[in-house]
Length: 158
Image (cartoon, rainbow, N blue to C red):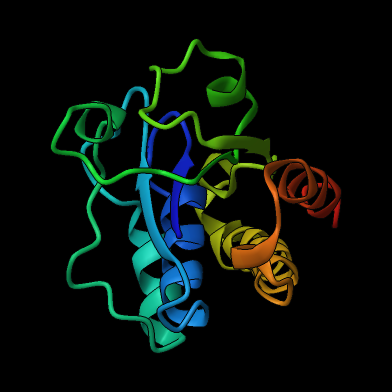
């Protein structure tokens, strides 16, 4: 099952959730992240946090959602937005009409640098709880309606 995580800048929250899904999913899911207006680089605190927690960040990069709308792009089953800006934008038409969900999380990159540790840890914790809740479900066997309801319910977890 392929999951695309969207955020406007693709430098913090979407990068964190992509890493969480790809590690915790243990092959059940393959996550990608992208942005409508990518920052062009991953926020340094995202990399610091993920590195400290043992995630592989060697391929982490800020990318445009344009990479995922062409005929050669991986088929997406789920698209999750993690910021209000990306959720409100008109997204491309994804092949296969994936299930869409919104899991808004406060942007840790807007915090003053002195507060980055706490802001990024808080965002990570919320995203990790949500990813863990989704991965506990038999998502491969759920129909679209069940999966959409579960995604919406999980998106409200703090």
